[in-house]
Picture 1 (cartoon, rainbow, N blue to C red):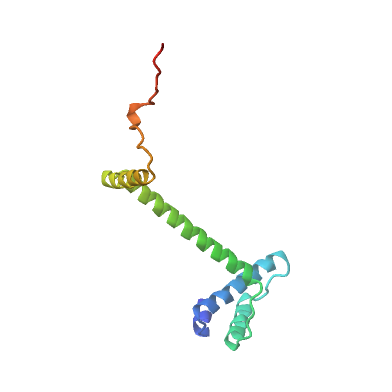
Picture 2: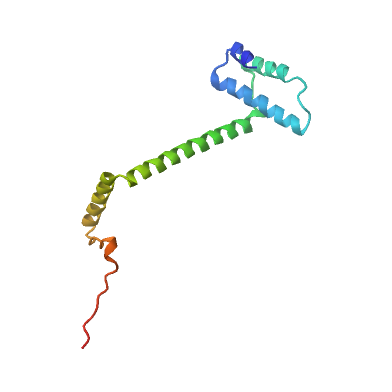
Length: 130
């Protein structure tokens, strides 16, 4: 099949559409009438693609599924990279100092008093008894 696609001289996206169409037709065949000769079917699809008569149908859900999977992988890779970056910055004293400086600057700009250090515990005001 790969040889047929290479010899077909189709550009990448059209070749992928033809493969998606073949996959979709095979899946449809599992639920109904199977494709008797998949290679002949592929060659007909290639011929239609070369002559501009190819119209995807069964391959559309396959293409959407593939695109969704690619986006899922991309999001997962991005999320993992952000986690690694966060872990690196969290453990980096210089990064923590820079972040704290930005936070302190924001508090100053908003005229919010800085909070007590974490180890100081809650500060309770007591009133003098008469």
